[in-house]
Image (tube, rainbow, N blue to C red; front, side, top):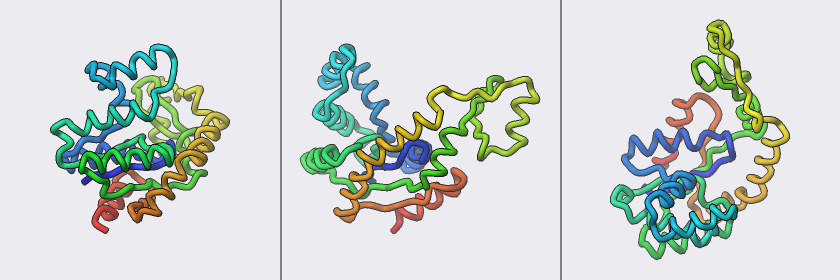
Length: 214
């Protein structure tokens, strides 16, 4: 199983990727984690990335593709992988396709975690962390009992500064501009499958499994 997982911030793609990777025994390759691992390991592309990040610059697509190639060469990726966080643009999707063809491991599919933007906004702006337990809650979706459990135990519901409507609206606008063309790219190659990402984690995961069998 070789797949790319797509979805806007708050769509739950990282959560679903971890569950699926564990069940299918393939690596969940998150771009951020992969970059940090390459830098820590001192790999060829990791060292290049480190010097660029140390200078405060963005890592180029070429280096990211090199890091992906290094990661896919590891033994745990021999039976497949779930790539999360890359590609983010149509050009990256084209370059990734070329790389995977060269490696002889073309993608089986791209999965879109599809969720209404109004719900995304509530998921992200409504996030709260209980100061007492560290539990992640949501003022829109968590039960009143869960919220009361935190406050009744002397905790506070902490709201992150960057979880405000203006910042999140900008993140979603960037997603629409850059990443939605990636969705169309995979749709045009008949590799796109969509999963309704509204509901509980378990419900969404069952839909994801059903989609994989289509």
